[in-house]
Length: 272
Ligand SMILES: Nc1ncnc2c1ncn2[C@@H]1O[C@H](COP(=O)(O)OP(=O)(O)O)[C@@H](O)[C@H]1O
Ligand SMILES: [Mg+2]
Image (spheres, rainbow, N blue to C red):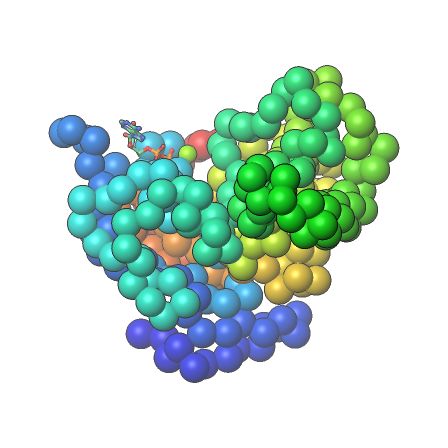
């Protein structure tokens, strides 16, 4: 077990802290299908944690459990040292956990800017009634939200498409807008479900750089699902490997790459 007070400095000088999220013995069933079977791992503060494994292994289900979309039959999730009660997605979001989806989930008819603004919803305290009475406060909140969104737009270099309806964007940029919306929530923990799937080499390089920059500049802890092993090896501090709903490997990229179970189940076979 890791000591939660431990701080590790990586080869490239980043600081990895104690356990931010501890996932304990999660089992998730859909009728007769066991999507996740007694799986445990942790995510440490400031790290980039990859989840890999063949299709149907339970990776997306795991992110859905973490983000409150699915409710496991067994197991516990501890976040910032506290056991989490069952939560709805908006409650998880309020705790500082944001995500992107395997299949992009944006409002296609809305502009890039408006899509990213929806990422601020969890931070808006003033409801409509309050806005009518305390318009001053609502206005201040609006200005603050705009500032965060503008910073994210600059950071991800999407100024030129801010007014474009998302439906008109090429796939790679849609993925970037989805990342922008998640970042607009200023998350402590960012969950990315296949952020580079379907991208060409150049788009993957851009996305890799943005993920590293987010981690570096904001200290955001990141858990991501990815199939491209080159990307996983380059980006991640530690890797969890799943197969048929179970964890079959866990360690640094090098440890995982040399783990025979992982080679047999995943690395040794053709996939994408
Ligand atoms: N909402 C759902 N209803 C029924 N079965 C599901 C649902 N979500 C996932 N599953 C099943 O759980 C298993 C794991 O799926 P998933 O987590 O999407 O795998 P991965 O992301 O690793 O490809 C699969 O057998 C899948 O069919
Ligand atoms: Mg998936």
